Image (cartoon, rainbow, N blue to C red; front, side, top):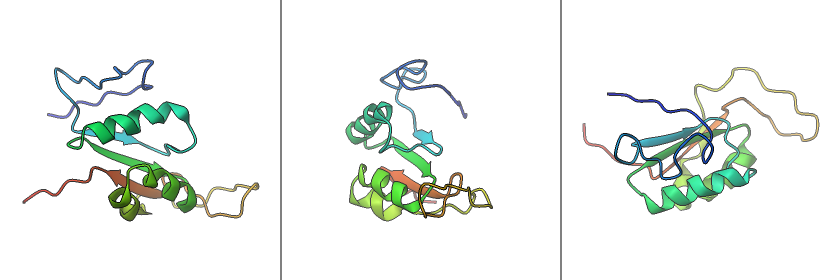
Length: 116
C-alpha cells in the first residue's frame, strides 16, 4: 500500500514523521537544496537517527548536490549521480556558470540493499 503525504516539515507534517503509527519507509525531496535551507536541518537529523528510513533527494546542479549529499556522509556523497529523469533542457542561471537542470542530480541517504 502506498501512502503519499505532502507538506512542509514542521508546518503541516509531523516533526516525528509519524505515518499511520510508525516511521515512513522513504522521505523524498525534489530540488531540495538541503544545504541552502535551515528547514531541512531537522529532516537530515531525522535521517541520521533513523537509518532504516531512506531519503531520496534531487538538486539543480552538481555542486549543490555534492554539498547536500555530503550532509548524509560518504555513502550518500558517493551516490550522487545525474538523474536520468531530469528536465531535458538546462535552466538559464545568469549568476553562475554551472549547468542547471530541474531535478538534475539525485542522491540517497541511508541507501538500502534489498534481495530480489
